[in-house]
Length: 496
Image (cartoon, rainbow, N blue to C red):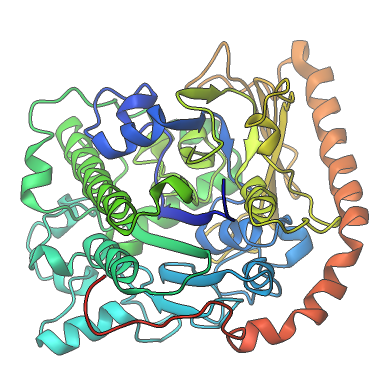
């Protein structure tokens, strides 16, 4: 590359791993994401470090686990964000869409933040703020669609959070955010490299595609729901399911035994929302082409966590099933091998040091995350088998103080600190996670070893992260105010 690359990081919210046609999901319609896959490297076993929005993102943007950065649940304050290191290195740093930081509109190292957060915030217990999307509806004099507006429908309980977008397509949150990203790419005149983070709010519920995208899924064979098995699950997961059955979280009325047609309908809306996102990804790529920057831009596409969509009787996330913890991840651009798939177990927060190295910034030694760049060079690929995830003190998952997952090769263990019962799955023999081996005498040694591995991992990562607090103190100003301008040129009146 003749100059430092631009970096575009596209993060969706709550997108399952099985949602890109080119990655063994023939039920999907995703031509632009397929284009990224064929033109780049896909990580087929990318795992999150925490199964809800803010903890996953705080981990990604710090390179540390929740037990280090202190963000175990939504609405807990962030202490560090490596975006400031990009800004200090001379990058123009821009966020358009969702980051799920706390505070919501803190700088966190960005020169510009154009925030669009969750689709549905109509709940009295959620923090109040007005983002750019709220302001667009205010200017139009239209009430923003949410669980409040949908509750007026007689069939609301039967919708499972899935309905057709009722307003102009341009006001749909994914279209609104995608168009803001292309608008920025068309208008920005700076002459230095930029880091553009695009946070698309979907396919997080409500599952609300426009009708034309929903029509694409008429008659398609869609993956079936993995049957509920609540009596076989640990107490904390049983309690989580019971909570979701009594609360329309994010507009999803969860039901204990939805019909096959209800489940198919919910999934069709979800997949159609992904196809809407796919169109916006294509528009961002086209804007890079029009700007003459595609050949000098590294693009990352991924998500913060998945969505159960009824699998195992669960709604949304807050569990450690594959539907939740495994996400799509594709990297494309100069220097990235094309049409390559990586099968190793890697972690979402590994993208942090990867991006820093692209920018010529040495990742801090206290980061637990490991760069993915060895997968892109000419040498032999590394071998990575273990990934960890954790969740604690959640407002919805109240049946446990701490849930921890270890996936080692094809074995996955889920440990609950306050329960003698957990989960142990052999994903090679049982990819749908229907056979819990926790109490199987034949797997007692495996269970004991993996629990001990969790203990060692937590201790070792805590020792490694001793410099994190000092980094937070040094970088505190980046949480409060934007960094100085580093690239000449501002927005101009005409389009580029």
